[in-house]
View 1 (cartoon, rainbow, N blue to C red):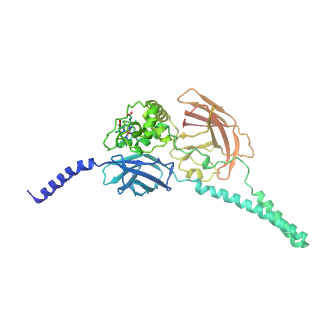
View 2 (tube, rainbow, N blue to C red; view 1 turned 180 degrees about the horizontal axis):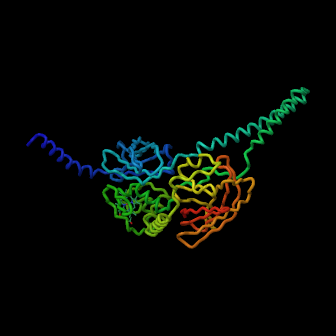
View 3 (cartoon, rainbow, N blue to C red; view 1 turned 90 degrees about the horizontal axis):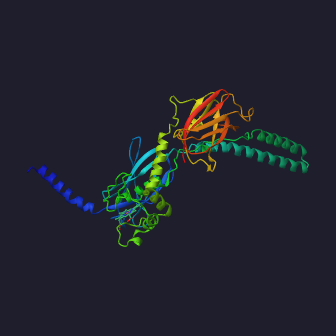
Length: 437
Ligand code: HEC
């Protein structure tokens, strides 16, 4: 036998022997909390617990989180630091780019790769750059007002102290300053900032959150569920795809399995009430069907896409909205608005009348001072239902960055797929949005 072949044989043999040893030695990795909204460039703290055999927290593993941006590019890796308690590891992660990320966590020397729920990273806040500018002007004007009042005060004091000429000079200076300060006072009109724009974070149903938790908490390490990618764990627990949960039993079970069945192999994963409810919703078929129906509705809704080439921003607006990666301009000089790339209006204020939304429109030549009740008519009809909506209560608005606007405030009676048409003078503008329930 040649030497090289011999080595290969030995290595293969060793690997064969090693595999069962590793398989007997497995871990379940749990992400303690699903991260809140993550923004590009902002650090997120993550805490993991590693349990050997899914049961005993274990120190001394090399915990590594590996993340990849959906659009490709280099993978990022962060190494966990011991987190105080046995088996706890802390990771400080920064996702540099907005968009969809996939990520996994491993705990060497154990072989399992735990896939974490897909992540949507939000763009860095644009407001952070723009808001202070507005505020600075206001502060500047306030300082001017305070300063001029102070000058007037000193002038009065000097006058009392009989230094009339200096007093008079200061009084005039103070009065002029005060006048200029109020002259600069920004027009008191309704204003729109990017913060007013809904963000395309989709509100998620409890069942969707439950699906994320099923991955993040390491349930996939021991259970299969056909709605989710398989973990490479051992599947020592039952397949939960068609599980019919008895809610009270599952609540008690997830809170503390051993209290329900002493000696069970299922660990206590320290779930809180909200997590238990979300997991319960995920395990319940009915909830899953509701979620599936909602997302099918959203997918079937032909929401208005960003036009190509892009529509020009209305005259008199700065680059601000255009630079906001979440929205785009829609329409022409006669009538235009700004829409969200996601096409989803989510988290709209909601009561028994329906969902309330505000939306600004621009029209060349429109002046907020001259036309206080612009004659803009909004109509809406549901593409996936029979409901309609009419609103003609537009008002005027002004913002230094966006110029004169026709501001609408309207109520959509239901969530769903809405086609909305605005008409003003001879112009009309139609677009489709998905209103998230
Ligand atoms: C370390 C492995 C392991 C992990 C991790 C694990 N389970 Fe289990 N689970 C089991 C085993 C084993 C059983 C069967 C236990 C028994 O009957 O004693 C089980 C049973 C169950 C049952 C069925 C109870 C019944 O008899 O009706 C549910 C529901 C369940 N697990 C949910 C979960 C959820 C949700 C998670 C994640 C939060 C999870 N499990 C994590 C091992 C695990």
